[in-house]
Image (tube, rainbow, N blue to C red; front, side, top):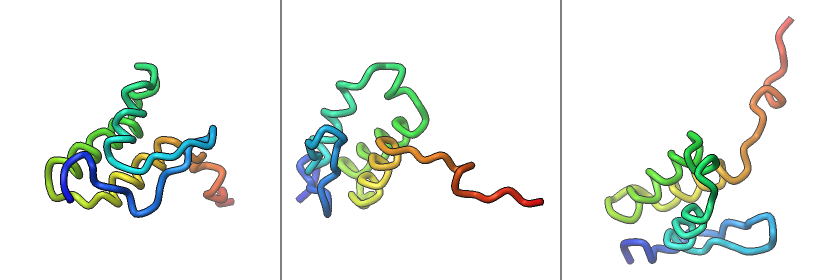
Length: 84
């Protein structure tokens, strides 16, 4: 299967209980985001990789991971201990 109908290996869970199952679902979700959100770097990366996965030979899993990272950003400073 190719194009926007390619499925993710596992659905992406959204905070309100919905799920994204295909590249097309993720694209539709992103289109509904406010401009101030989808223009941030994590979402720009996700959009780029979704397009690459749908139209070229980029693995769908990379697009899936980028959407998850945009949806659920983590505070890198909280994960990296300070050195003394």
